[in-house]
Length: 310
Ligand code: CP
Image 1 (tube, helix red, strand yellow):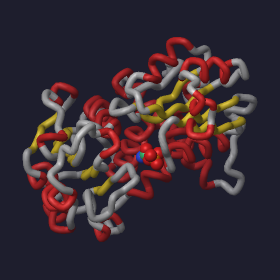
Image 2 (cartoon, rainbow, N blue to C red; image 1 turned 90 degrees about the horizontal axis):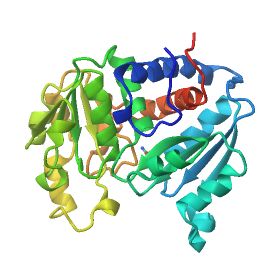
Image 3 (tube, rainbow, N blue to C red; image 1 turned 120 degrees about the vertical axis):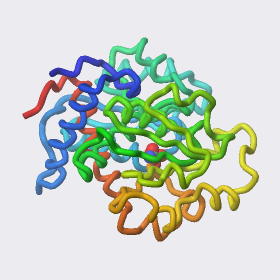
């Protein structure tokens, strides 16, 4: 099947078949990063712009590496050092970049829906690298790629997602993607950080205790507390949060043997996850980062009309 979308704004918009196509292509792309010459000509002559209005380590770097491995020309614009600081609007910035004829803009923005606004007005493709508390599709795709690679399938997996669900774009994209791929999702977090009615978004059970979410889990995905998105303090203290919703070695023992421990990063060691678990035998956190390059190569390839791969 061919990928028919100009943009990738979120996993809510994609079918299970389209997600599978992106994951299959990512599996193939991963091999390129193991070659001595880590480059193929798939995007030769194309220009990819990384436009980041929020900080990023993994996503920005990984999209740049991915574009370069596909032979695209890349450039990075950080809002903190651009004319945005002088009051330029998103649309004016985009129109000025558009005048330089880019093919794909990879954008991170603090406002949910900023990408949809831009994609409707732009001739270039838009890939969402995170919009507010809405979606972070490349993160969920790399999470699913890692689950499939390690456990053979996504269908039927019990996936516990723990932490600040309300403000997490990683949680939302995983909820859409994992539900479409047939996983069961168990959410846990402080009641102030679980949005009412979240069950309606997918194949979800909400647990009041973390223990109930991780018991028998195939995957435990820990989330960072998004203090920058919380208007007021929604937690009594970080110490109390760590006590009730931090991942300890004892909690890992309640999950299935061989459970995958995941975290999208950046991690707050000693808050949502203790160091011995983050660096322990079940942790696949750095494998998630490795798969991020392959998934982003797949996304860039398909929005530029790549079609099916061998
Ligand atoms: N997971 C993630 O989005 O990390 P960055 O904020 O470093 O890109």
